[in-house]
Image (cartoon, rainbow, N blue to C red; front, side, top):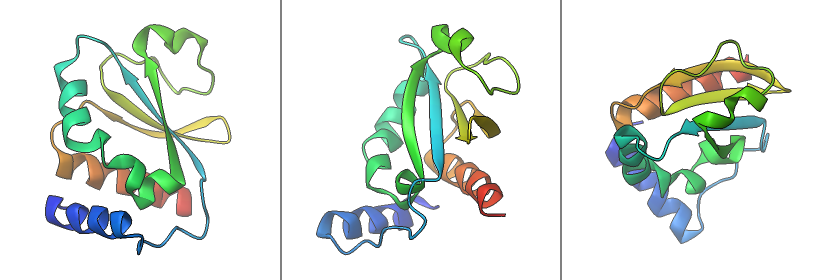
Length: 120
C-alpha cells in the first residue's frame, strides 16, 4: 500500500473510524531480527509504529524473534539466513516469507500478496 494511503489508514485508526476485518486474526507474522541489523531498524522506523494500527495487524499478529532462536521454531520451510525475515504462519505452517526490507511500499505490497494467499 502506498505511503500516503497508509497514512490515511493510520489517521482513520487513530480517529476510531477504522473497520476491523471480520475474519479477525488468522495467523502470525514472525519477524526474525538481530540487534545489529540496519534494515530491521529501518523497518521499525518506517512500519513498526503503525503496524499495530493496521488491518494487516488484525489479521496477522506480529511476533518478533531473534534470528538466534530460529532453531526452536517448527513449521518453517527453510532456515532463516537474513534479517529481517518476515514469515506468515497459519496453523503452524509457513505460508510465505519476505526476506529483507527495501522500503515501506515494497513491504506492504509483498505482505498483501501473502495475505491474499491466506484468503484463497
